Length: 422
Image (tube, rainbow, N blue to C red; front, side, top):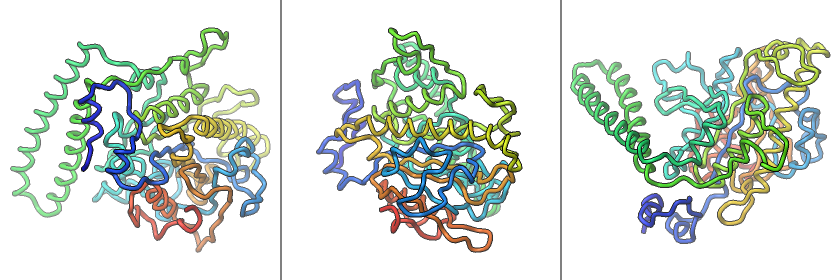
């Protein structure tokens, strides 16, 4: 018997997200090693000389930028010479991290822009209040219809969305707006269907893509209705403002709010508010307010191997790595509904569509994967065939299968990395 977990929640009026009961596990069959997914993306990548180990295997020396990850060595894999083979250089490569294709190459089939996180959200996140949680700068998440999805930059707004219940007046307004939007969608669909018979085959294909966009909106609206009257899980706002007994003031502006955003992801996953989360570090030429930084971030990435500029860039990238290490520690300490470390059941991907930002190269992307019940503790490197390394989407196929999504291909994949990670 199939059990609709969402309806069960509503039927008994429980106000907190329920754990995965044995009954549900039996109904769904055997559990996959991982049940959650997180992607973290620094927009300009990481400087290769400080990111990649110089030796392969398990006895590699942790590189300069990643020393804070030493304690996570057994839960972490570093991969060298992974590319998106069909992606060229330039800043646009950053937007291809989770899909492996560029906008200019898929004008006639924008569905190919559908990103890994959103595909996973469709498969494992549909029963959660938020199928996916998009934080930070965004740019890497694309809908099935090929639309770039916005992300949340404000930690207070994220906290409210996750943990603060709307009052009755707001709920009524939300329900009314959704009903109005659904009515508009119905009219639009009827008009589009009447138009369809008069179009050429090419235009009919384009119209079908439009239908896909409408159906996505419909699903999102209906999902919002389902969750309006279900209370959100409670959480302390200490994550935003610190301990009342402490004199420490929490800075909620970037980059200081990076720690807060990671903590919000941990809470969102632990309360089962979502099972899929993405966090993007922005690009731009902001002047990071760290000691030793004298130039804008973008300017520093074009270092030309100048030691003085590399020293400043490493301060920023070391901050990224240190915050990621802290996040893995939090994920190891937090427990899921069955008492297991959250990291054991969450696949965590760190990487970028930008390889060497100094030359705008999209080759040899900085890739790490952690947790998720996989075999870790190694640095793997792949041979390059001419310009190209191993397709990064081969890793994505393995991550999908680890999540119980039995696909044999994703985007530009040519195989998988199961022999290394599972």
